Length: 64
Image (tube, rainbow, N blue to C red; front, side):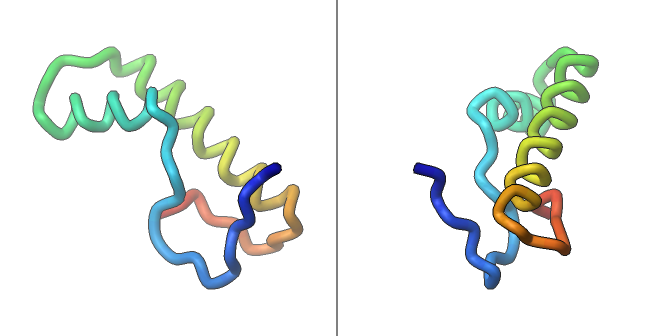
């Protein structure tokens, strides 16, 4: 069962483990694959926006 998205939700939506790990590396100044990072960000934003559309939210957010 998919957990609901509250209409009162504000701020970041949950991130995938893969995205979280890449963000931690980026924030720490560690090396990371920029192309992979861009692909993972795109994939995660699409997933979050599509989830909002699937549940009928007509003003979507990328979570930020």
